[in-house]
Amino acid sequence: MTATRRRPRCLPSVTTKLSTELGSLFVTVGLDEDGQPFEVFGSLGKAGSLQHGMTEMACRLVSLHLRRGTPLDEVIGQIQSISEMQPWPNRMDDGCTVYVRGLGDAIALVLRDYLAAQADAIPAELPIAAD
Image 1 (cartoon, rainbow, N blue to C red):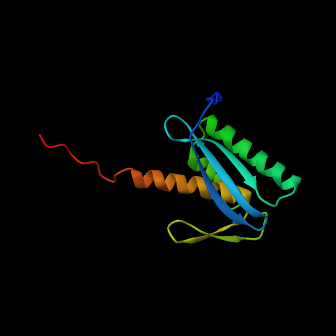
Image 2 (cartoon, rainbow, N blue to C red):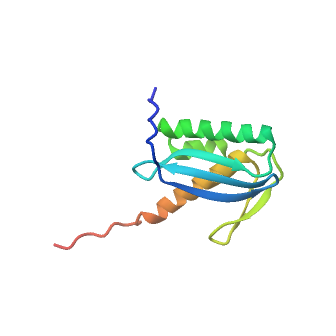
Image 3 (cartoon, helix red, strand yellow):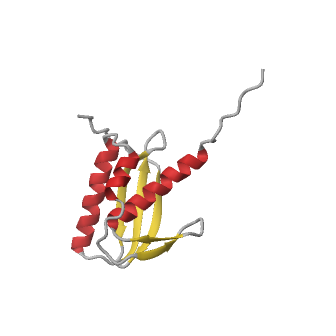
């Protein structure tokens, strides 16, 4: 079993705001020293105590997997498309509209965006140095 990495005192993070039928959902992804997702926090606007508890539980479990080295695409694959609420439209930075169907789906969306941004940052073909 892979050991759980200890959390440093300070981590940089990125927060994404999404809309849901329960109000705004803020998903914060903390990044490790290599810029990889290390933990996830969520805050759901107008939710009651049950929804707040479910949000915390989901984020803790995703964070545990990230801290244990579970590949990000595996984490995303397990939580995406879980529907527990009315699909809610969200306009993304690239102009596309995506629908959030639940908490897991929202977290997966944020993590997928992170993966896509990482892929865009890596050149498809590395330049060859001239002699």
